[in-house]
Length: 249
Length: 305
Image (tube, each protein chain N blue to C red):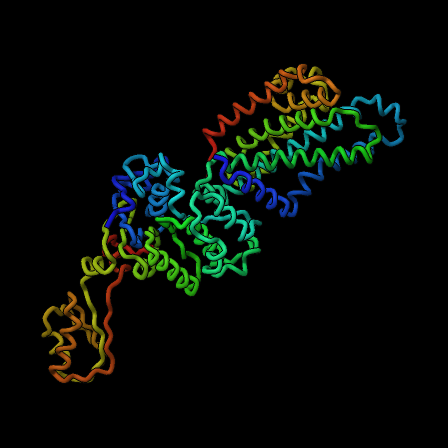
């Protein structure tokens, strides 16, 4: 089952880094958003008022992290649809490679890139961010990876329904960005209209944000078992659905 | 000869469209077997069912004694596959693709670097897939299909879109595969390719196999007509030609005669007649029917339509 997995994963990383916009788009954009927004919000304010600002303390780092995860999903959707349209998926299948291995390699690539981007974010934050970072970074990395892993399964589901590679990015964005809008980062969920509140309750980004915000603030994992369970459930449901509807060509 | 591929009563439809109606045939060890027919006849669907990439609705298939559906991974280990219109990752390097493929198979009989050498890709080993020419891509896919030293090699439309030179080079490669005792199963819509390469061919149209045999047998069976074209000024020639046994029509334009008839003996009879009557000719050609004509006869239309 694992035959070829590491080789394929390593190869996909190398190929991704050769894409003219691949590395730039998915690694640098969250870092830039983080830095630019931080600078704008932070300019002209005293360090103490910044330290009290909830958004600067938790909101922005979590927003940047969620962007990393969403980018990973959009990039996965695009890659899978290009691979399908070009017959690459089919060519790989006509070998002793298991279908799960081919897809797992892509998930691992995205998780590694997520971790790498987060590391870059932390380094940039330490150097340029107006308030110090005092978050439990190890736990936060785990929280981000769980969140990314979970919503990548939505990526596979989107990749199953996208008709051609040309539509992959727009359709992916059309599904992911509204989730971002109601996930609680921009407005507290309690203040949303009832319909949106109901939608927010079933979208995984809500739980990802809740988990990451909590861990960032230093809360224990015990307080977020529900969030993790919701993310695992999303993964299980989306993976089961993808297994039924995923098209290889 | 032992059959390595056995296909019996296979049917496959996509929604309401039936791609393969009812297909049965056997491929023997060590032969080059061709499935020939126009685009959309069901060639690729049939081949992909045998490779384990598609599940037939009905019928049974055995490849090397294995069920392509149940034993798909065991089978993939022992066969080599070249797919029609396949691509690799745009920015994968040639050696990386070979290296990946080598790692996927249990048995490592072929040396990847040597294969690249043989296929004339050695100086392209660091090139990205997207920068290869059509012929180079096709040769890379053949290299990948041969990397596990497979017992059966599947080649789907392997020379489509290639220039005549590249096509001939690839034909030589396919003959080499057979020389090494492997079985080759290929599809093509090019009758010349089938004629030059295949030991046996199956003619498929609208998802049904119309006939299977050696190319020359198919020609003899379905198109026994022979034609001799010659030029002579001899005034008694036309009358003598008409008297030859087996001749059906004699057409004349100035000094040029077109003699049509049936059977292998026609050409001999014409030569005999020329020497017996001392008829001098300034041109002499025979026109033999080929698979293209067989196809026309069997289906009522040309393969290109």
